[in-house]
Image 1 (cartoon, rainbow, N blue to C red):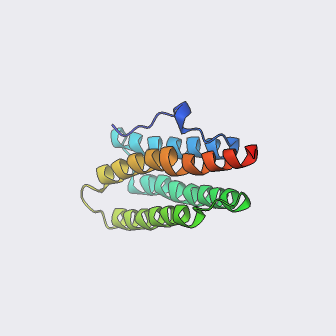
Image 2 (cartoon, rainbow, N blue to C red):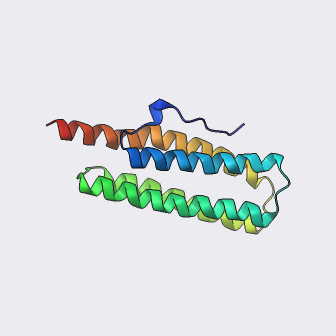
Length: 135
C-alpha cells in the first residue's frame, strides 16, 4: 500500500508549504487509487501531469522561501528538486511507452521520496529558518 497519511510531524510550520505538501500527498494517493479503478491511460496521464505541474509549482514556492531566508543549503536542496523532476519526466515518458511494472515502481518512489524529503530536507530548512527568526 502506498497511501500516505498526513502526520503532524510533516509540518514545516509554514501554512502555504504545509498545504502544498498535503495537496501533493492527495495527488499521490489519487494515483494509488487508480490501481483499483478502471482508468484509461489518458486519465492516468492527467493525474501524472497534475503531479508534475504541482510539484514544479511547489518547488518554486520552496525555492523562493529558502532564498528569501538566505538558507545556506539552498543549492543542495534545489538539486533534490531537480533530480525529482528529472525522475518524474523519465517516469512519464516510460508511462507513454507502456513500460511493464512502472506503476508500482512509480508509487514506491513517490511515497518514499516525498516522505523522506519532507521529514528530512524540508524540516532541515524549516528548523534553520525558525532558529534564525529567534535571533
